[in-house]
Image (cartoon, rainbow, N blue to C red; front, side, top):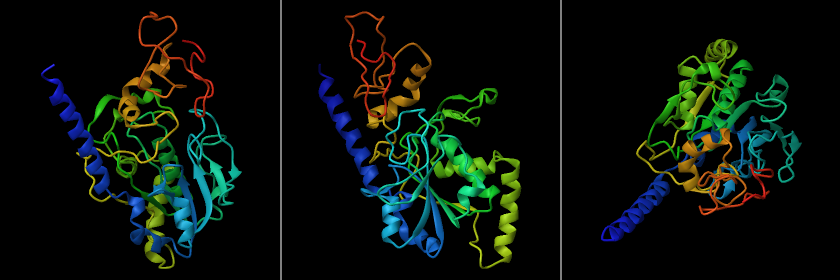
Length: 319
């Protein structure tokens, strides 16, 4: 018991330092004076979801108030509003709030087509990642970069801090098992922001051959023609962020990562998805608990139920 007060003090200090880090860090999207001038007078396509916020306002709404002409919204797994189940395919639609066409890149296709880009001059990518290899936003990022290069569209990536960016851990992917939940040979917890990872995708030569070839053609064209926007893709960096930072997410990145406890446990407990154990979907503590009906009844108990973001969880309505 004599260690108990020290433990409470440690938790308080840790939580205080996390809050301090988050208060000082400025995500790329907040640096509007840097990138908004580059978007003015252009038709903009934005890859975004509910995490794409400046303060409490979605990036889309913020840019519209700045007079930016957004012609297309692209959305990842869980959809533009972030409430679809994990793995659930979403369809294209017109967003009721903005009346802008939303193209799902987690439905009938994972990669934009030339048709999707016909009314777009510049692309913007702004998604909050959690720094885990099987979290699909980084796979969407790679396909979005490839599509931008292949169709000669300049791309701006608004970087955001990685809440699991203060360590690197787990096995490196065996690319014989490459899929949309793991495309490149990186560890489970890879310790990079989404902007840093984008630079790695390009720098390691992981883009499609067509994308790599078009990328260099675009640089040459942009240099020769001053009417063009002279970048293919670049990253608007965060301010006051480094890999010692403990960043607290202001918005849940997906339905089943509701708080920082879940974000920190997720790299480990997501592996229970491949077993006959529930990983806690359908409860208020997904990825913080696990269990199965066959385990002893005198243990911690919970009952998964159908809810938004987990409409049919494993062992639904079973203790």
